[in-house]
Amino acid sequence: MEEKIKRECERAGINPDVLTEEEKKQLAAEITAKENGKRFFDGVLDNPEIRMRM
Amino acid sequence: MGGRAGGGASSGMGSGSRGLERAMTARMNEIQHSATEHVSIFDKNGNEVFRNDNGTENSVEFDEKYIPNNISIHNHPKGHSFSAGDVAGTIDSNGAEMRVIGRNGRVYSLKRPKGGWGMTGEQAYEAYNRKYWSNYSKGSKYESNYKGDRKTAKGRVDATVAHTTMKQLAKEFGWKYTYFKRK
Image 1: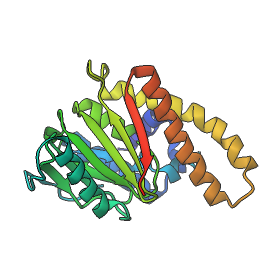
Image 2: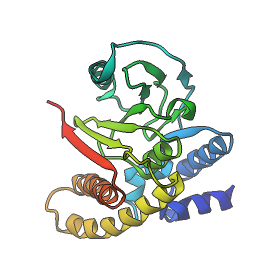
Image 3: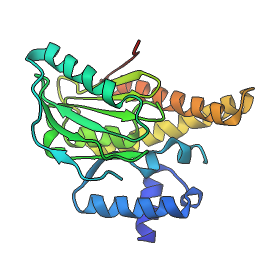
């Protein structure tokens, strides 16, 4: 999962180091949900507060 | 992430675009000030075909089978324009239009061009992020020069960067991107 989180962050242009442990858990759950066919508007990495940490 | 999504038809609000606008307005009234995300999907006559009121602060789940050729609306508690995930989701599912309402009353709309979206959601996601980060680096200068508190400065930068990114993408790809402020 760590590798998938890194890939997802890279795709969004976000350094994974800026994520909190809780956000990493949320992102992991989101990745799993998407793998199971779920779709979302927005997502952990779309959170402006995370983007503003860059 | 989103909670349980409730699909299926619920209410018919009338016929044609007036029915759609009435249904959209009623839904915006319900979700504008919420601290968590909500979504509804309407057909062109204003019939709500999908609703999920179990989103989180940062995302809401939808069922993509209701998106094709329909109009979705969801809220952004932080008030910014569309995210990369929003645009990719709508394009991948071939939505006719997506709207977002912020707590601040700003309503953003993105419409599919007559000839179709002309790209995949993934391509749109990449294009969005490329432009977003380029605009963000310019926004950082604005933030450093802003005389108010940092939180306000960051919020303004994000709102501006997302909106500028959407304007640029719309111009480049022929999307119809508009916004207005509710009274």
